[in-house]
Image (cartoon, rainbow, N blue to C red):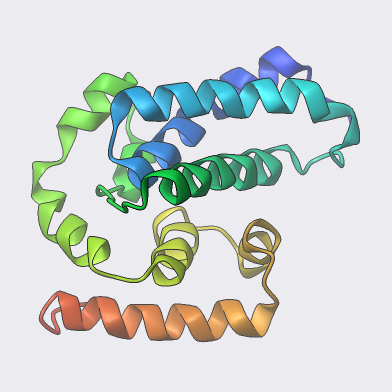
Length: 167
């Protein structure tokens, strides 16, 4: 198996990390800054990252940067992020931010959930990560991911007025 160089890793994952950070921070400039900081940290630590674990490491680092920001500011805001954004033909970050006004209901519902519920919903249901990938990013065991997701979906269903498909 071959290894990607740092430039390839950046071009492969920068849009994903930006969207994840924007979803967590609800601030385009801050998301851009923390995306850059995430890749600077990757540059400094890439030798210690297991082969094939680059994206998990980047997501975990981005999440930690966002959490550090919240600890300093003591505020939490989220914006909608839908799988359709990944499937569209590579819009620019600015285009992506302007695309989905209809996700406002989801935005408001997710915003009211506690942080652990937001994390697990973002990673498992919105980004579509496996249980194992979610465990690696959050530092949880499989049982905690499954139980927290179940509770999070119930809470989200309540926030949405009970109108949510069971998948």
